[in-house]
Image 1 (cartoon, rainbow, N blue to C red):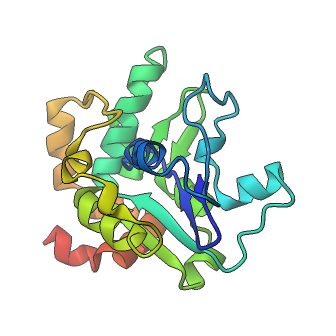
Image 2 (spheres, one colour):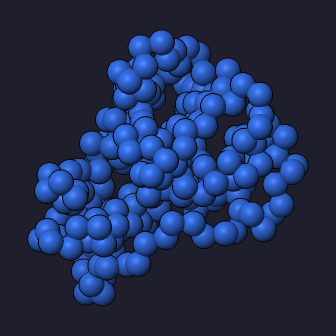
Length: 214
């Protein structure tokens, strides 16, 4: 999480969030009034940098989101599921990571719990936040333009060289079998049907999903 008096940026997993954190640490670490969580298990074993607003309020009862704009990193559903699946396969190879679960928007996490894409929507973008009208997205597919458009309203981003936006950070090897990739690509409608909350948020960020699927 990164925040000041104007905005709260949420580090939604597997959406180029580490890249955002790196840019802020490199160019805005001394900015007055800007709070940046340390990233990395060594720096913070509690993994607070992945807090949602509700997590932070539970952790710190004095934390007040007030009327701040919620800025959140985000990406389209299928690439996110593939990235999440690959990340989990890499960190917990002892689990039975069945790629067919992705058709339902499901995957296993390292603790053995089966999770779902919509769980992350509920966590980071609960209904009151979505209805507030104070949500802005940093879309992974449009990282540079979205970063500049959103954070340019709050910070002097002229100090960031354009090449910084193209650096790849914390990327995971794709562990999805090629035949599963082909199958999932052909079943996008089913995947979106099984992830209605994600679909609704994706339409807020990108426009009608149906136009993307055609």
